[in-house]
Image (cartoon, rainbow, N blue to C red; front, side, top):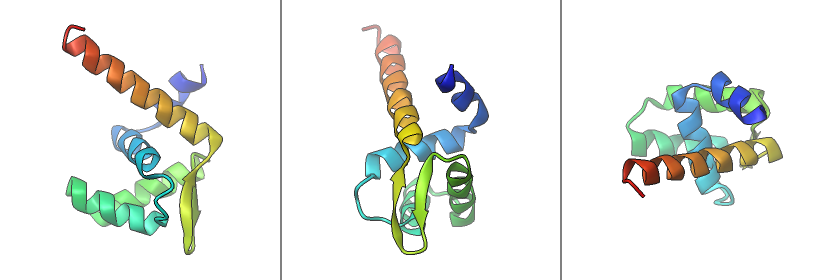
Length: 97
């Protein structure tokens, strides 16, 4: 139930950012550093990425900021892992496996 509610609340971009944050967790990046890297890689405006990361922080899925490395909360990590598993399963289905 939590996963369905969380996925319904997040925008597609916020889902992508949460998954990307999970992939880069432990890298020592601050939220601003994460925003800069994702912005450059995805060719998205930095302000858009920062705004959406702030929303993820407000939702309690990610922490960090003010010169501290970002981290996912337990809920954020569980949701990101679920999204990664869902994506892999969808890819397998699309490939007919």
